Length: 355
Ligand code: NAD
Image (cartoon, rainbow, N blue to C red):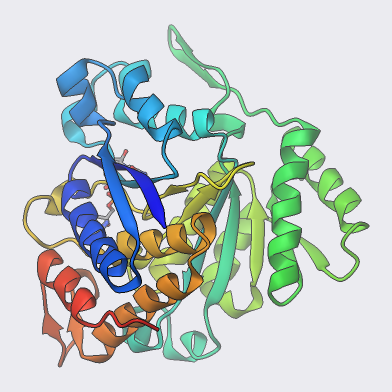
């Protein structure tokens, strides 16, 4: 199959981790007889420096014309003081909105080889950590009006029933494919938008009688994720809650550097990115863990290109790399062999086999 992939390397560690993911994709293409063509797209701080805009229209169009988009990360201290509308993250928000990718899927799964890397007690880790956060991605407070007047700042959090319903359906359908348990997370004791969220979820629940729906307040959920993560299977929540909870969930699996994500809307053209940021503290030092980006590329093959065997091959290669005792600095533990970003990518390629 021929696929055109828009590639956003971005800022900080972005170029390093994306390079490794592209090397892995090249190996998959060679093994399975596919052709992946990469179109470079400038987005984020690098685009501000080059074009004076975090996502110029011409660059956005390259993404919209692709079969899918692979992104490293954007942002960094260099652009902290630029005005709001020109910040690197604005490019990302604009891209997500233009692609219409309202459903962000973030797995929190512990690799058995990394049980020691979790900050949680062994007795909790042994119960198992394997859940998915389905996060609404193009609504809520990140997309409401933002304004500062004098000494007062305002950010608007707004959701319509239809926005809640379409992400709610993804939550129920994801639960149907797993253990049929869906936890809807909101703050309905305080927020009107959360009360609407809860009402829509319960209306939808009647259409999915095979799925058991539970409600949880977001503050309780933050606590339960560290206390008893095994209780969760599929969590559905709004944009900002999902952003925060998925970072928390990633850390209990060992490192934020291991977790991929997919973002999809009405078409198969998706946006695939690790859940972490541009990690300016380790950029350019060959220290970054590229696994989250490599697994994001695997998700692209699975969800957008209908290549499940190829996706399995990448995931198995990551597992074999961990089995062999190699670890990047973020998940390093006693008795393991520390590797850098480039070597990690190469070792995963060395373990890639046609399934
Ligand atoms: P971050 O995720 O970049 O880093 C948090 C911590 O995790 C750091 O200690 C970092 O070294 C570590 N880390 C992150 N990814 C890693 C990896 N692959 N391997 C090893 N360690 C890793 O979050 P931050 O420091 O809050 O944000 C830095 C910049 O990234 C900010 O400008 C922020 O706005 C931006 N950001 C971008 C995205 C995105 O592009 N999707 C997401 C979040 C943050």
